[in-house]
Length: 484
Image 1 (cartoon, rainbow, N blue to C red):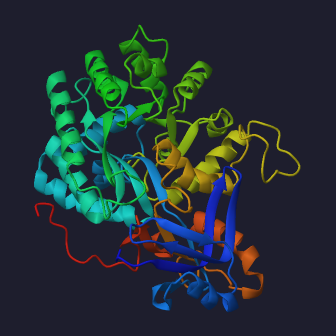
Image 2 (image 1 turned 180 degrees about the vertical axis):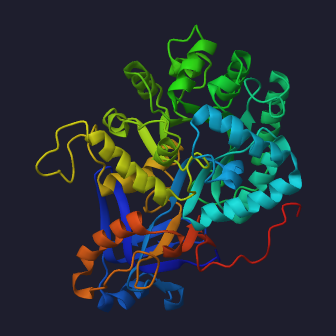
Image 3 (image 1 turned 180 degrees about the horizontal axis):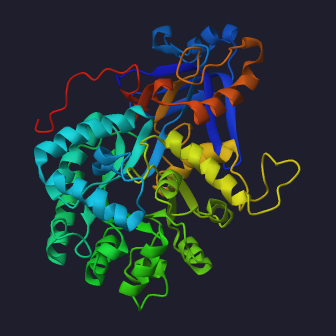
């Protein structure tokens, strides 16, 4: 953004807890030159607007007035996805996890040894995720060091906030797609960490997040694909670098769980495999967690790890339904993940919709109450209400990534990572009748319609750290050339 302040005037919807959000139709929100939110006024009536601007020393040319049917929300946070799997998104629906990896996924990922293919593909992939409203993304790359560097460079150039990891996988993989040794896997991992940390911090060194936009993340693909010595060495890297995040899979599929226990007979559980190797801590992001035992849930809680709920993938690959309500009742951090291409959509909106359906599937196992409470006292085996779904997509994801002090909601001092959404007539499938007289009540409807009927046509602008980086009205200045 420029060196001046920018002020938004209009509807602002902001998550406040797992059971509530605030929605004000006429808010003033100021974004400073560093891309951080400077101040927010919840409600300013139209006749008060100019006086408020003058009082704060702001010029009217810095004002962005939202139109009817437009509102601001925090950007979506995707806590688990595979950038190199986008080319095969929507295929292989007939398989479950392990067969799907062998027959669909590994052959596609192997193609990224070709750097020209990687660059061409990742340019499209990152643009798709940004325009779908993902302001922060946890990306798995392939096992290829150079291709994953390309991914990090493109993410950085496009201005998205992200964690980028190179997969560690030195066993139980096809001969054409496996790392030759533990030492080579570790060397490439260290090289990627160095490369990502050499990228410029972001649009402003004064930004309050004190976190670079693009960060490295340790990525043992899953326990099956890593020898014990590789996992232990990754654990040593993690312990020596306490800010380094970790991402991996856990208990996605019954056969995966069974085979993991076979490969690690000394571990008490799948979760214990990661714990014994020093890979389970407050910076760990565990994807899926569909088939955890009670003691595993408790261990995850004690270690402070977070869970990425990937319902689209879990339904699509017939993996099962994660008991998200149980995790929330335990106080475990939970965010949403698209898990492309086990999931067939790169949009967190789809994950929100399927998270709702997944919670309702679990609720079928209990007697249905005569009246479904809108805000349940507990979450286990109940449907997840709108505030909870909204929270998981924003603040929940920020907590899982360890960034909740900096992003995930609107507050002074936080980064302005935001979506300007429209549900006005003729836009996508969310068109609503705009009634100014009852606008306060309409905001709840606008949000619900967007979450359940919206798509990228409804996301007009995407902001990261105060910079306009995407959306359906955004035109990139020029094609990306990571070599520059």
